[in-house]
Image (spheres, rainbow, N blue to C red):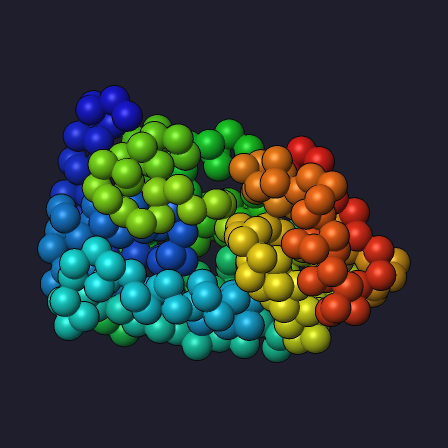
Length: 269
């Protein structure tokens, strides 16, 4: 990553007094949090994480252990867990095409309310330069970020996903090579109701594949039938799905969970 971008990011962050950081535990928010803690100090950073049924149990655990994995004493990082129940948001559970916008708007309004109670006016988000290039059509959540006046330092400094991963490796962040993640609801086709049963099914199926060593996969539901799924594996795993191991490591675990037909994305993710 060009040193000028890193210097620019440090300068950008140093302008703030106290901030909140929206933290998902993924690549971008981990890098943003690490840099913000480094520049401002933990006493000036409130870390906000929304816990809900939209995350897998592993993702929730990763957030709780992030500080210790980075060498921060538990008491040194101000982590605020915001308990949410997206299944009560009727506009969201209807699963329209702007689902991600609605979710982001709900969550960040909760974050801003929490920050207001702490007399903090700035919320930072890990949107990167590549996200901006996709635009609001590709990433509907960007509209909510814009409307709410959320700060996006990584995008403001032109940092791409690849640059963020490279610098994360230099910082020994364990998230550097983590696959891009999204909430469980993104595996449900638009127009199909988001329910706790469907979210649990997706988590169970992805966990079944992870137990076979196929981590970072995504299992998407079919719009017409509950017993058909579409699976995306990491590209690094695709080469392992050859004829001898396919049935054992891929088909059988899913069929044990009640899936009858499986479509595999041969391009991976």
